[in-house]
Amino acid sequence: MLTKQYIKELKRKNKDAVSDIINSQKDIGSINFILENLGHLPENFNSDFLYELLNHSHWQVRLNAVKNIGKLNDKVDTKSLFELYKNETDTNVRREIVSSIGRQRKSINKSILIDFLQDEDPKIVCQAIRGLLAFEKDNDVEKSLHPLVNHPNEMVRTIIYKEYFSKKGKSKNALPHTHTYDFLKNVVVKADVLEALQLVPDESVHLTFTSPPYYNARDYSIYPSYQAYLEFLEKVFTETHRITKEGRFLVVNTSPIIIPRISRAHSSKRYGIPFDLHPYLVKNGWEFIDDIVWLKPEASVKNRIGGFMQHRKPLGYKPNSVTEYLMVYRKSTEKLLDWNIRSYGYETVKKSKVDDGYETTNVWKIDPCFDKVHRAVFPVKLCKKVIQYYSYKGDLIFDPFGGSGTVGKTAKLLDRLFFLTEKESKYFEYMKSKTKNYDLYDNIETKFLTLEQFKEEARNDSVACLIQGIVVT
Ligand SMILES: C[S@@+](CC[C@H](N)C(=O)[O-])C[C@H]1O[C@@H](n2cnc3c(N)ncnc32)[C@H](O)[C@@H]1O
Image 1: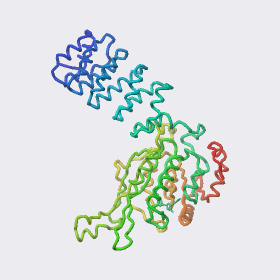
Image 2 (image 1 turned 90 degrees about the vertical axis):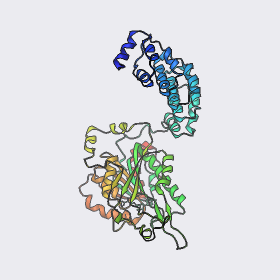
Image 3 (image 1 turned 60 degrees about the vertical axis):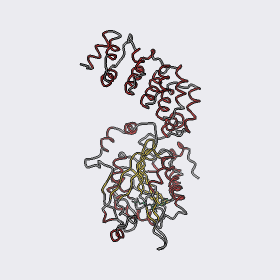
Image 4 (image 1 turned 30 degrees about the vertical axis):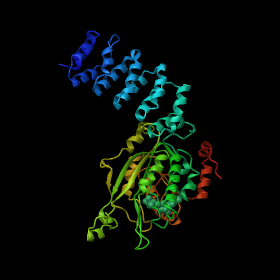
């Protein structure tokens, strides 16, 4: 019977033993079992049968043959592999060939690897890039890899960007990952977010959680066109990207909105904000991570189904919208999440651990919240979840559209710091009035600043300004 132990013994027996047993097998499953369990190949191993198997009619046998040939190091016959690549139709086998040739790290294979960059399969191109990156500071390699930053495939572009471009222009003097600037700690600025952000250094915040103004749905958000609205948000989230620490998160709460019809002769218009905003975020360096659905009780939302309930005519179906999206993005980086987590000390990690009862799916059932002054506030419950799942204690949480200040209040409650901007005096004053109650016992009291005062604070925080070369005008 074929067992792993038996295959091990065969390898030791004599150099042709494995080849003999493979040749005697009729069944594909058994051939693959032997090939998959060959493990390390001894020096004197007769590999001729592996090359013969490259002509086998079953793709998996060819794949396993290529994998084993890849283990032969100096004895790999690259020419045979390349011949197979040219005629091979199975994508798995083709990818394995490229990977096997790449793994050898032999400079005579450089030109073949460069040829692979022309392949239509982006995974092959990525394998070839991986193989070529082994040749550090090689002119030919750099000349062929650099232009791939404009490759049509996003995976290819990302690898090249990370390898050659993302490290450039990074401030060597940036603060440690877990730290931020004093002048941003527990601050609310009454200003247009884009003006305030001009004063904020790169890599200052650990998490942004926000709900942007709805397109022309409320009086604080009048934009000349939907395109202008999206472009405004693009600017805000590009700036947010700049001030976000490496590999940290942005959570954006939006939902499709409806602009009511202007008369009976017109129809209302629905705008898919989360879907239309998404490409702008991804284009500007935000990596898409998750879509979380905030599910509200049906009784809490506007009734749209009433008409249909009466007439039941197809096409006139309008379901009640009980969901909003929390779109989760991460600032693109070549570093793994583990790198972010390891930046924190043992105690902080321990204290920040999420308690039992956390959400296990991407659908969160939470009642909406109503406020007498602000018409679109986050429920604290929602805010708590986002802050607990995506930040550590002591982190700086940013909300560019502060509103009634729920993000600030909740951040404080969870031992985080916050930085908010809000352009409307009405809401700024409202936040100020509410803060008096819970600010009393805090180490860092909340500062409510005008743009001028914020400029002054930034100027005074001379270390921050010097380090980042910010010119405060
Ligand atoms: C949807 S509300 C946010 C509510 C907030 N999440 C809360 O829990 O109270 C959006 C807020 O963004 C503010 N806003 C709109 N445009 C702004 C801008 N350019 N800069 C700063 N704030 C802005 C609006 O005044 C509004 O209060």
